[in-house]
Image 1 (cartoon, rainbow, N blue to C red):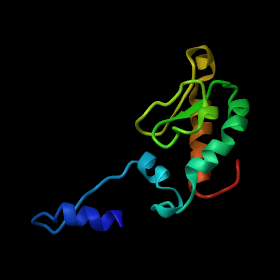
Image 2: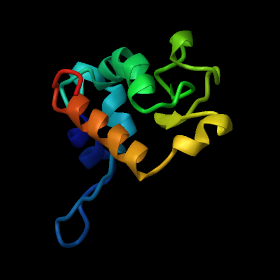
Image 3: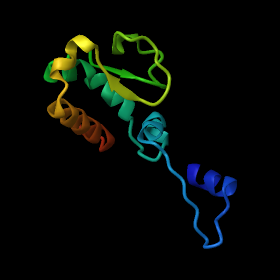
Length: 117
């Protein structure tokens, strides 16, 4: 689907190579019909409340395109663009490499279609 469309839109160069990139955000938003074939966004939405507790970050939110209807996802309202985690400045004392590692672990688990870590 996406790859064929890209090849048609961008023919190979003189060496026969074609390059393209899709962001993880784009792949996640495609859901079960996309390249990941998993509802990563649905998993992250479902895991957000326990993740806030686990991360000691009550304002932790998931923002970006695909989160428009999910008012329960956070305090920020709709923020268009790539999917991303965000939190209030008051909670920034917990933002550390440990939190970044936890978020990475949760996203990897969701991409693999695993249950909540």
